[in-house]
Length: 127
Image 1 (cartoon, rainbow, N blue to C red):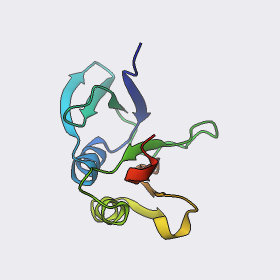
Image 2 (image 1 turned 30 degrees about the vertical axis):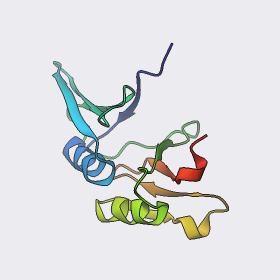
Image 3 (image 1 turned 90 degrees about the vertical axis):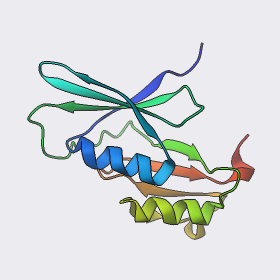
Image 4 (image 1 turned 135 degrees about the vertical axis):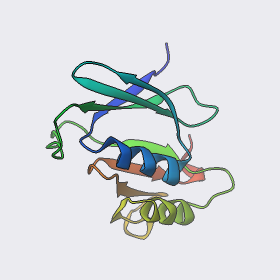
């Protein structure tokens, strides 16, 4: 068994795709057009788990976040500090939410363009 994907409902898929590409180096692997919705599968090169962005046609307002959803977590690259990775995510369109200096460990949180929390984990946290 292995993780396949995490699905997020989005109202502005292009904006989210650009964020995950610029902030974390994800690639759009597949786009599936259906009658009432479109699925976008993004993955970081060399990984198997994906993020599935689901756009329900006509839903152009940001979805209300449920209380049960927490966050997506992404490790920094081996050659990238946590602070640099955080700055890159903010410059790519992420909301400066909980920078590493405000967190008690080796991590920080940004919000993607739809408001979903993304935890960026520093190298020492990769266990």
